[in-house]
Amino acid sequence: MDLLNTLVEKGLRRELPSREEALAVLTTSDDDLLEVVAAAGKVRRQWFGRRVKLNYLVNLKSGLCPEDCSYCSQRLGSEAGILKYTWLKPDEASKAAAAGVAGGAKRVCLVASGRGPTDRDVDRVSKTIGAIKEQNADVEVCACLGLLSDGQAERLKAAGADAYNHNLNTSESTYGDITTTHTYADRVETVRHAQGAGLSACSGLIAGMGESDADLVDVVFALRALDPDSVPVNFLIPVEGTPLAGEWNLTPQRALRILAMVRFVCPDVEVRLAGGREVHLRTMQPLALHLVNSIFLGDYLTTEGQEGKADLDMIADAGFEVEGAGTTTLPEHRGGGGCASACAPSDSAASAGAGAASARTDLVTVRRRGAGTDLAPNA
Image (tube, rainbow, N blue to C red; front, side, top):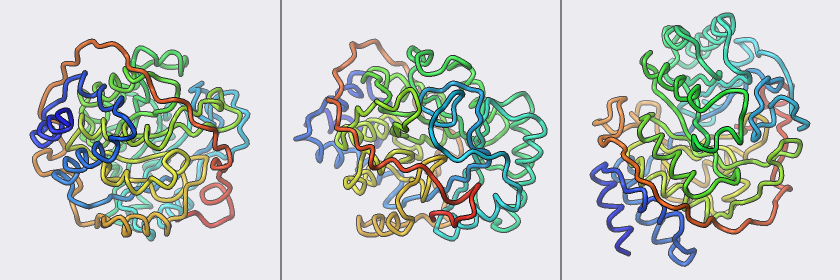
């Protein structure tokens, strides 16, 4: 297929595809799916070999969020039956993080619900970072605390944080349909705060919220221009009690095409398979390893993931290897920087998305173990 040959050549050169080429990936047929995966896999292997980085989430504060993000079970007015608790103490968070590290995680992601941290919250998280680093000096720590104010990113960096996550989630043109309590520009500003402080920026998207192909391409092109080091790709987990509980728009094939498009647009960036993979990719998760070079191990913020051992078995069975703590994730040429080419997307009509899949509500399980409970975490 000429399209795929072109995309592979551009990916190996770190050259930005055209908007039309990115849209075309999303509209390839299921019959061509393995060709798409194989093509994007060539780009993935060029920059990351067969390594898979493992990441582990620790939800420092669950629920009780004043923001109204429609996809989130922790949102204002959420009726989801999730765990709700205030800040974990540093030793509790460190214990939770240690379980992930013992399971093979190279990075621990510290997440807290809320609009953004107060200065007191930054102090609290700084102590938690110190406790984790004291136990596991080599582990990477990424903070995800919401919108940052001036000087907060610098304080997190000084405390030992390696990275900061703040996702764009969806396209700028549709952002107001998903969230009204803050803006798309607020999110971009926070990513830039993190970059300005010398933190490795992590910013990605959520697919499956009813967006068009054009929206998906818009947000991925915006991410390329923003230039984070890692791009987590989440697939909406339609939790009952949230406004998007009825959005079951993804098939495993659709999810794989989205991952392939992200890899072609961001060829040398850590593309992370994040929330929703078990729900939407299901038994086709191993194919995604040919597209991404990073996954989350264990549970998510408010929902459960598959067993950690199952993840490790999947990686080994698919012929990949877990990335060691002493290995640098990003290609040498990036050096913490970003993609080589500037982004200049052109206008194009939206393409029709894949048909809605049957709802698999049986695969959504509210987290009842790990941080905030007396039960052992899933790692």
